[in-house]
Length: 161
Image 1 (cartoon, rainbow, N blue to C red):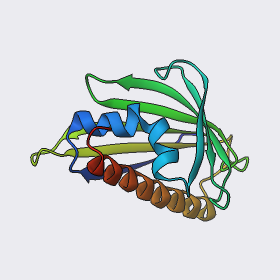
Image 2: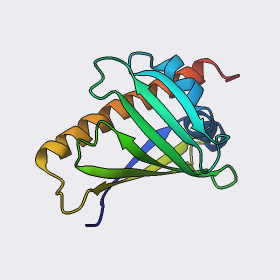
Image 3: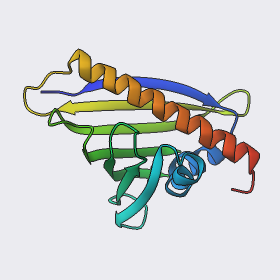
Image 4: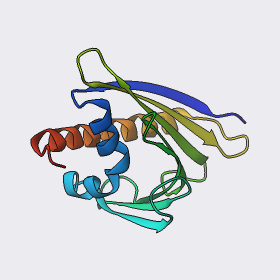
């Protein structure tokens, strides 16, 4: 079965290079610092941070799920493109095979950045994207948006980061 894609576009006042650095390159160190209520730790299991790197994100107790493993596929500093795939998580509940995220950072007219995220959910076999799973996806997306906003606020308050 094919994947189910969801596109979201958010804006930040950060310029593209700073947004890419915060939301792609420095994300591993910023997440537990900025959002300890959500992210307990980020551990690099394989790789140097670039394509092929495998990371394990451990979520804080009560977050709704406990961990996710990501594989970085693209970290393109010249074109501000970050692509990764969640390859394992207790969020999947034997329903989802993987979730891919393609994030593009595009310069906005006001000097900030338009962040365009395409998320594709790949069900296992003939599994369907059920209303319950859609609700879980919506809730996870809302939590993710709050974490990204917290990172933006942190970077704005700490310009040397």
